[in-house]
Image (cartoon, rainbow over all chains, first blue to last red; front, side):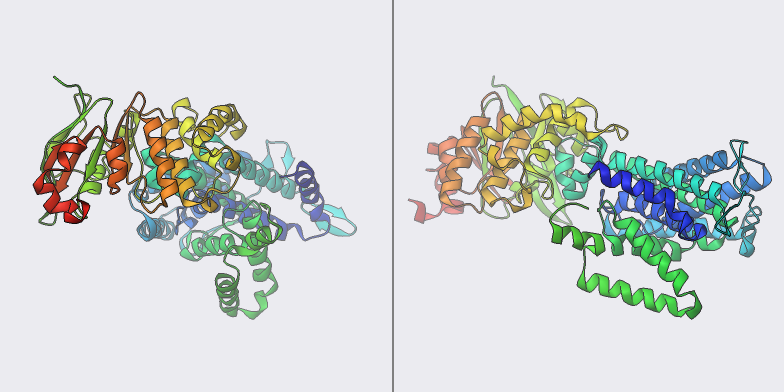
Length: 313
Length: 250
């Protein structure tokens, strides 16, 4: 990918909150990171996890709890949430990778439902109410993330935005590096032809588990950051709807493409906020879009575009 | 006494009461090209899957270089230097031929778990990968999409990838299956070339290929050995003629 494209996108990311409502952008970045993490498994390892909300949501709770009740600074809170999701990913992954295909998806779904149940019943999660009023705190004890700047008469939470943007860039870089590493090369081999990868001497279960842990940790990083943005960790974050949503975003944008998850997340998040007035009809609308996508452009938006332009996007 | 690289002792595999392989005592001599032949359903591919641990034997033992490997996992047996091919071509279709071969070269380098490094560090393997591709006549196609290569070229790539690991024992499952006469000749020459300094055990239906390559032939029927020997002997054995080759071959 052209270096100028990256620089242009980075500058765009820096300037965009001056034009677009920052909270919307932050939500988008969190879900895009979530989708990138998910695509590391689906697009590059060939594993369909149907329980990724477990990592997104549990990290959201862990970060929220630690920041709110133990007074952790936001960067340590996000780190703790990320690590927790990674450990949970190790547990779930160890159990799930013993099975393949639809059974793998079912095991991840079942284990994610257990996490949902814990979030509903455990004493520190706030049950149906979730964790509310999570403080955004002071980054490194120096930068107040609540600080609002007035730009052209509009109050903008720029400190928080740039923190979220930095987390997003870090997460994206980790995932991108993983895909384009010697390790990522083996993941692609497993996706393409698992028996052949085994016969070349690769212990594929270890590779799958490692990919699962990295993916879970990055999904956790997204969820942890989201809890600071919305100052809320709720049951929605760990519900199977959220697991489905990330599948939807990734498929819509394009599995195994560089920008697909970002475009998919953008589409879904935009539709959700633009169509919030229609209430529960939104699921029907997004469902219809998904059907059109599966029937007409199976490679997803970016995937189809890349095919037309005959270059990877 | 002959030096056997691979031996099976009373190897059996049952699938729900059906015994696909029955008390098999197979011995493969080091340096040979050893062919397994037999009618459909004789258990040839099952034996391959047992030897490479993709299936677990019901009873019996497998010795590789005198070591009991019966309970090992598929990747372990590969690490010992036993590399197999598959009946349906085993390539990584969305990668380039160069990347296919490089994946084999990458494994012994110990970098495969390094997710924090750039894959640019794999470029130092490119020269060796190109050499291997050249040895099977694929150097001009090194950067195409593997899935779009002609069938014969995919099989050639598979051999190049297998050779990249310098296996002590190569298991080829029907390397010329589904090929035109011209490709069959190419692959036959490649197998001959690959057999230098190593042992090859192959399943093959094409008796012309078997006749020209194999040092020793084992004929299987219903999961057991029917006859064994050099081609000249085996091809005259009346039991073999009846069970497999038929009168038409005479």
